[in-house]
Image (cartoon, rainbow over all chains, first blue to last red; front, side, top):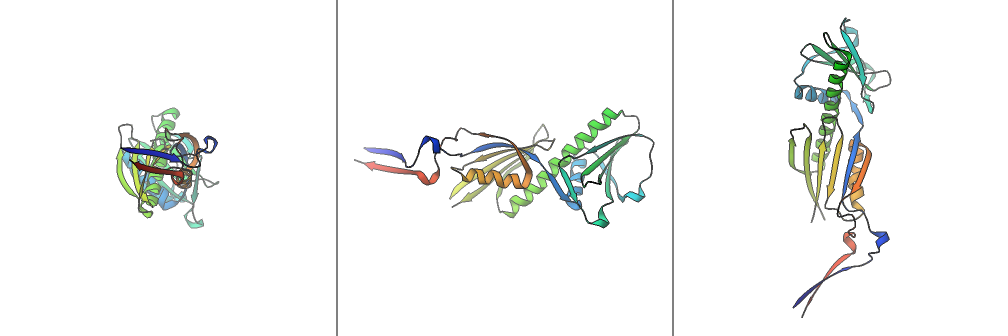
Length: 172
Length: 66
């Protein structure tokens, strides 16, 4: 007969400890311009936008169309003095979205388009800015995961456009 | 060797849901903190069904044969 006994030494109910967790994390975007613009390009492409130009503020021409200004609240673009006027513009169906750095160092978004209401432009800007955060987090996570040598066993985008990653590693 | 697994879902709005699996004990929290450093602020956290398991180092198995 074989009797298998599990003895849990030191197991006191008050000292039971956390084991597995499910968390919700709100991203904070702290990026240099190259990393941020890479996320913008990836996000814009996923929504059918094309990159219009990457220019300095002094090159900007005035437009008379409807404009909406947005910002990424939890963001900080780290740039040296020479690069602070950099901006990136993407366009789709007559709507242009320009990403830049505001005076406080946050990522600013200007959505511009003729024949659209401010509400429509705001919705387009919010959709794109969400995707930018998604791409920024994805790229940052992938870089850290690869640096640690973790194995990515699943990497896909589902029907709701959420990116699903499953990562595994082994410890002694 | 113990297998650790993380499931991450990054929504189109940029919110991240993280499920940490395979940890027993306080090291689970260390894993959560590592992701916090990469991603951002922890907004919510809930324990899984394994919450009331003991730490690995205090569990022993005794096989007794007659």
